[in-house]
Image (cartoon, rainbow, N blue to C red; front, side, top):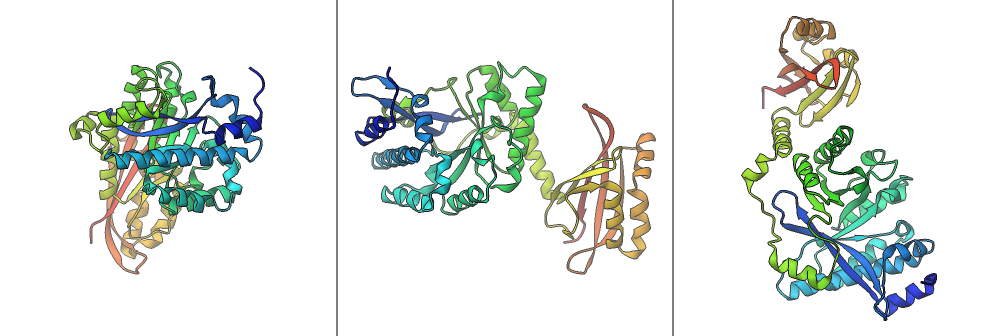
Length: 398
């Protein structure tokens, strides 16, 4: 095959030789259809199929990639509009967008206009950007994501784990969906380190209330592992390859795309049940602190609607106690400092105690003292010999 030129690709767009293929996404537990990713396929007039890897890198070198992205947006919106007209329940569709859209000042306006022209609810369009787009962590990228979500569209980060910046941008952005790159799966997820990394990713995504999608799922063993990690959706050859629109419509007709899933089936998923338990604990204990007594450090796990919000989220543990003492009622300061000193807790652990507890009166941001119950439970980690404690604290007064 001769080398493809940019002009050939642009002519193919003009002649609508580019077709949209859809790869379904399924609920991990119920295996119900929940969405799809739109992927481009180029069929030449002679029937020859040209895969995206043969022409997208060429378009990425210039602004021509923008024309392809907007072409795909139009075709997807046309499809969603037809589904509505045929009485089918549409599912959200992800569309990939190039990093070059960051320089497109009217991106959100153009996206909104296309969706509205076709009568497509904006929540059905998912703007999918690759992790590499965020590597520079420029203000413009973060601002673009904010504007897209403010306009009513969802944002997905694609290929998470494929680059070097995987965790560095998490604190700076707010997205809806995290797509886990297939490179994090090797074989059947039998490697222990790999499993620990994946479990950690799904845990922080759950804490951030992001929907997780595992890409490239090909084996039943991978699926079973993902079930234990509370992965919400899967996308991969195990269930379906990318397919033409007509085949995807048939799947839409056959599948119940409404949110469902048996409640008890979800509870049988151990990791999902643990996350539900964690959510319940946070409702009861708005202050949760992970303490490493051996290393004199702490990490604030939850801090919501408590008496005061002046505490740092992480730092040196003995400084945390010292800074908290002045916020206690004068009559309770000595008790608090004594019970929760690292020395006292280490002695308690050595004596075989399971926790230390104290009820004190703490000054809130509103200038009022309230009774607060604080308990440090001593726990063991299979990965460390450090003395660890989990602080659970809540107000005893409304």
